[in-house]
Image (cartoon, rainbow, N blue to C red; front, side, top):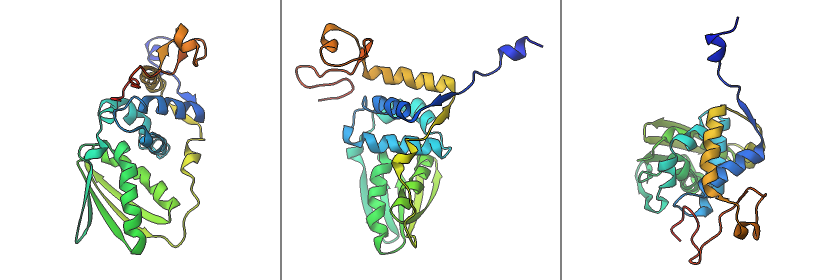
Length: 222
């Protein structure tokens, strides 16, 4: 029987190849206001969160304005008797996560360590750090509530074999509308083909943006 039920059926998901996922994430994140040096680590976090069922790609799409405008330089750390307090200063969890892990690893070198994370939107996504901590020989537990989280780490008996980049080599099944939305956002990093773009790079339709005379690229302050 055909009719309303058939018409309302959701579109089938899209099988996204690893290279496509990395490229789309990279093009989106390179439109951010923060240092591009963070982009590979944030891309790895997005994909890890997606593979772990935490919704990394949906967070990238829906929270993009907050991710784009994050100011990592405002993040700060202070120590007290019970451990470390990491103030993310409003930075989205996907952006703050690499710095949080950097603080946690040396702290756990001599024994159990705790990091209390504050002012970190979408803190639940920090759960993806469990994989990265395991690579460095840490057993990590993450408890998140709103924009706060508590990370407890202890040295494991042996490092678990884990390659974060392996996650970016695995296929993903993504909701069709979500993938289209990410594609439109990623396209903001590109410019239409022109005589200038054809003289540098491009596939005949689009090209990576070129810096202007001051060395400024789209999404960057300089």
